[in-house]
Length: 462
Image (cartoon, rainbow, N blue to C red):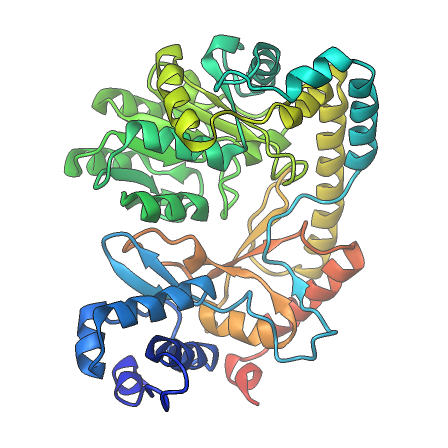
């Protein structure tokens, strides 16, 4: 059924519930049933309101429900699109939970023991306890900034503490950067498949994201050059090492070429090094080529523990003073207790040990995955807990995701990361770190592999 046919038969209900809720339920059911394909654009709100004889606000609220359910996504300046329903619970009984290969969550290691040790040590210093429970500078305590600066040296940075600000994770850092340097209507260049957190911020701040062509080595310099000449923008967001979702890493020659384009056009780079932190010896950050026009973001959420809301932004000192104003307006300061824990782990070597443990567990799971997925053309990295799998013909991403969900396994499809008008490839991202055990991971991968090997028509039969 086409979307136009669906609209013409949409029910406004019997008056027992709000009209927007009835419209949202009809659209959600059509998406879940596969009647509306992934990637299809929903009608403009004004057009649908006129067709159904309701207000534009009614349609806006219906679309908002679909977004909250993860069934649609709004792309700034382009409209609202249908997303796959990979995260929606299956029709199985509630006591049979789906196998989660969708979420990117660090595995459980020895963090609890390290946390206990840090708290015990902190408890022996009453003066320090009072300090971390008091108001502090918006940019963070100096020793926390010094520890963060030393941590960022793994990416080739200078290690100067006065270039570093402590944040509540990389997402908070990204928000502070964008609120400081960008204004509503500004364009931001990024990979054609990019971090969903950036897309959420762009929507809330009314920024326009422009997708840049990528290949197996990341952002293509020539494509960046064309965009820099075409669009009135000064900002680029990218993840040159272990890009999410594709796992691509820019080699040195590509980094030099991309940095040269940015330097020529005066582009500021907002660089995401969150996943790169998993590597013991990552390549130098792009920011090292452009220290005065770069904002380097890092945190421990993906490589250690999402609840350790500690991140760092490195930038020229003049920018940090401006960020401080954004921090004050946002949360006044970063609560010092968690950065104190991170600092103690960094100084004692516990942080490196915990990340090494994550790296080892990732390697073990990747070895299991390679054995199960043998014969498939997928991409990953020894230090990356994610697999990027282009689906073989004739599978389509939305169709495959729906069938896999019915089989009790969740994944992420490429449309979850697609920027603006960029077409999403028929590919999925598989998270190796989300399952609670390697046995559960293997089970989920075996179901996935069996489905890929089945003809789509047979897989979709009731």
